[in-house]
Length: 375
Image 1: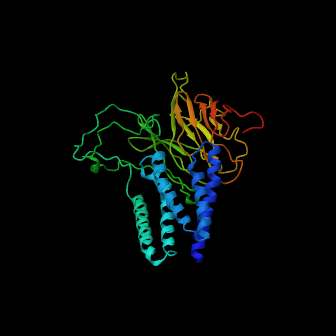
Image 2: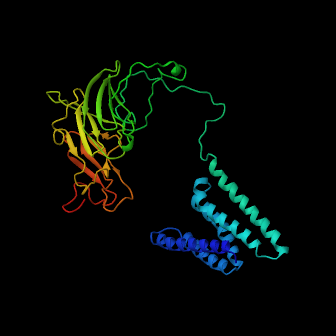
Image 3: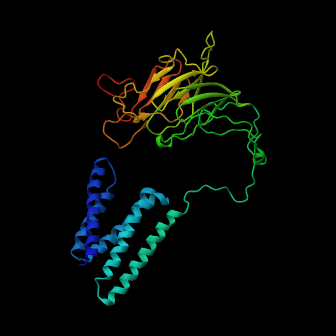
């Protein structure tokens, strides 16, 4: 038996052992029987191939053939669901048939080799479909273009996705496909931010537009209010945020009190969740911190999170303001060490900054600040 044959037999046996053990564990979680059966078949086939028994090849073919109805039953005809279920069994069966053709007498060799080549071509064609689009939704050919319903009513862009529904759809037609090529730069505003590529800094924010003011943020969470007509800066606030990695601010939140306070302070608020895990509220008119929110306008998002190393937990997504709550999650380093901070989703009172509720995937029983000794 050649070394190539032994290597192939060993790989099949090792794959079978992995599938058998993993499949057994999956069964304890209520998963499919397929992986245990396939693992046992591959382990057995590997042993047979090592012993140069042709039944090992037919076992590979049987797994490939029987995997087809199982895959169709489990995932339907969607290509990307079938791809991981059928590609490897088909490839192993093809290689096995070609291997078998070298063991047989000359009178039987040609027929099995032809079957192996045919199976290999089918496998290559199946793999080739990975480079063509699947599940594409296309317009009906010949369908005429119709403009969206016109809405000329002035409207704010008050959330990252325009509204808290997050559709990003803007029902405006003043700019359309007939005049978009005629647009010209009206003004330019420079943030003054230094883009530090070694810290993963990317300027990726979607500005808010409230009435005649734009609100924008930089990768290091410098916030500015800009006159939407002239580009003149109305105010700027530096949060003095810093993180060793992934510096970016994708957007801000906007909150308006149902009843404005007598002094008018912080009747409308801009909300920022920073790259060093703080939640900040600013007066939308002046850019000053809202004194009644958290501690002088700031809430520490590391509270209850346990030991947080620099760069292990922070916010990069725009905060969602829903009713009277600010809802945030967090950027968490994955698969780096044990005992990392949780990606807990929390809601804070938009008026006071007090924690309203929490949902932790790792411990759903904790719905507020963790009890003593827990995170």
